[in-house]
Length: 266
Image (cartoon, rainbow, N blue to C red; front, side, top):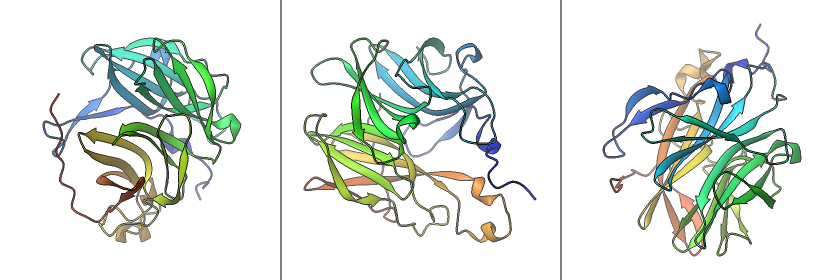
């Protein structure tokens, strides 16, 4: 019988790509050409941003394939002109040997901010600032509730931060990016009704398109008829998208509602 605690199956992962003209219909584009010289066998959680006339990726690297969750992890910065070929940058120095899940945004007053998960601090969500996207100054902790996959974004005059708390998504808001108010409930904690959406939502990303915003999340498959017959069914993940709504400073998501996607073309 396979060891249920053996997590080698979530290691040895490349970064997949997909392309779309409208944000609705997507075609698989193979795996990204990421240099092995600055990364490793296991690549997780890329954050890709267009800043200063080129594409940037902050990528979580696990240097090998491991049976447990105790390996070192770090974040690497890469750049690209075309989203196809990536050039190694620097390994981020954040004062910990186990940091994952970068989210980067430009600050309104200049400079940049990075949010990330520090596993050495009970998986707290921390942040760091930079003037040049290369050198980072760790500033502190946003929330010490354990979680991962933070996504920070500006929308409707506020900062928002959504992270995966493993029982749904923790949502927070801020007017200045420094002082945060936590929502009392968790987004996407209740499974949806669609056949591929029958478990909690995890590891969010957010697309802001004018006055609308869409949350992209993954669902580790559970509850489908196949799950009772295939012991490895839970290893499948499906990406879902739904529209975010904001009412008086509270984010909501109706994962069962039809989603109409309208994105501006770059």
